[in-house]
Length: 234
Image 1 (cartoon, rainbow, N blue to C red):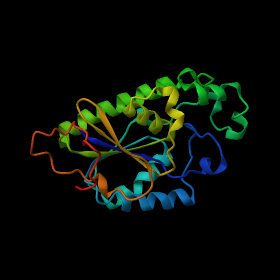
Image 2 (cartoon, rainbow, N blue to C red):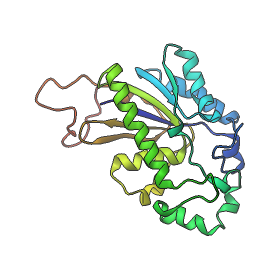
Image 3 (cartoon, rainbow, N blue to C red):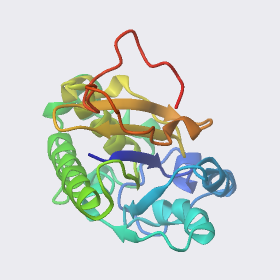
């Protein structure tokens, strides 16, 4: 099955202002975020990506644009299921103000019980479920079109990526706040028929180690973990 390259969007104007952007329209990358997006294209240059899937929100589309400019042959898709959590009435508010809300403690300590207020509010459980469903669907599609060793990229948001990493690790959603992903960081998950492998988490450095190695020629299965740990060689 494919390897998923999860990219959090670069730093946005909302990140810089300490605002919970959610699905607010017109939230773009700031100067730092644009520089991060430009550097991302170089960091990914060695990876034979099969496709790019993006959240429909502007800050994600801006993050992948420099990559698409350098590799115009890459198929590009958008998927609402990897869009930001619907924070309801919390959308657009300062994080410093939200920290005083009673729900804040639930979000931090018992996120599986958190439901954001208002008609558009979503639960963190529902957010994770749709994101995991999206990845499973894209895994099947990418494998059918490009083979089991394919890599593809999904550009999404912090809570989405943290929830997908938790799912890959077999962690309960209540533990996902222990995971951190910086703007424009890469989290890589290799899926197999029986279990996923978390290859990178919030990586902001060199990514050449994610180039797929040759398929095993012996009795070793691609689903097997390396006994003793990875050798670090292709």
